[in-house]
Length: 493
Ligand code: SF4
Image (spheres, rainbow, N blue to C red):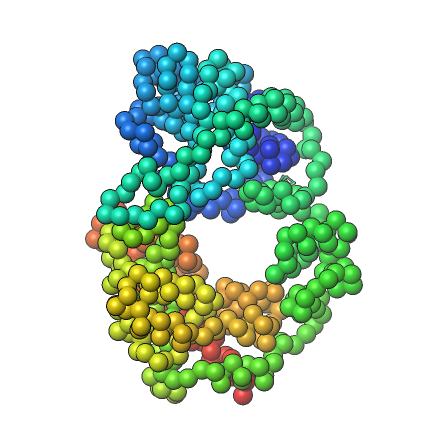
């Protein structure tokens, strides 16, 4: 086992030395599901764009490390001004610098690019490590910076690279960290060389700054379910209980501080309980609805780099909705929908059709309505001529999640959650009409966002299939709401 380190391994070691050891010795234990592919894709898209931040550049092609290092040396010797992915190695410490400015005479500036909108503590360690490697090799790092997305940038017709990115100068801080980097490198290398897994208890660092993929391995000795499965409990409180030895659901029931919802979850889990149904409260909720009655669900995507005029980085751009509706109580279930074509700003067209599809003065149900209401509010701010109608839709929205959030209707299978992903299978186990797994291609919101973003590069056939998948997925979201309402009505009878 070599004790080599990369930027990423070093940062793992900063978060938890045991994570570093496991990455080196037991990588097969890593749970990939903690990695968010959309975040990774965004990171590489942002990284590619940022390479052009200082004008013409030369990128070191990705390949084997020694080849990348040799090519970097060649470019530096040739006086190349801006080098992307400049790669270095010093005594088993490897790093690729996102953007390197070659000031010649051994002086360089280094720029680390992140797709986040602010500077997190771990980024200081990342940049400090790079400075350490370069200065150990004899380079004089005259500037060490972090490049991140400027969340306040509002795009005009053209994208302005110098405004979409913010450059933070971290030189003084990361220079003051250099002795610490040297000591940490020594400690981490020693940790890697150990044959035995380090003894380290779980702690808040398992989720900060990143969720650790070895969580399953490090908690396999805990009873199931345990304090970390309690719905709606803050991580801080989970660890407080854990450190006090209040770990199992039995412990929690005896000694834990639980709110009413958590109490309900644990009691249902431990004891044979009938479903918890507060008929009066459900009836009160249903009395607040009126007909015509609409069921609305939006899909959106969040481009880190704003694609459209009048949008900011990471704005939620709504590109699709599904709308089931009854014109009168007992009437037939009707359906309308909208799905944008890729390439153009979908917001105006979607807002106009929404105003045509939902008349003023009606009641609209959404599940977890804050998302739909926020998007409608943004559209109303963007298009003053539609503001009155959109505001009316906004004010008519009622949250179908409320009876579940308030635990007026609870079953063991909801596992303490009121998310539709738990509530739906709990209410309709094994119903093939409500099974997201049986859908093609798109099974959740994240996949819908990714599918829409990918549509821009698809040929006609693939595009048609992808649209079909998106329409089915979003249609199921509102159909599921229709069925949930039916179930509430049954329970209130
Ligand atoms: S789960 Fe926690 S203790 Fe285990 S390796 Fe990850 S960060 Fe370290």
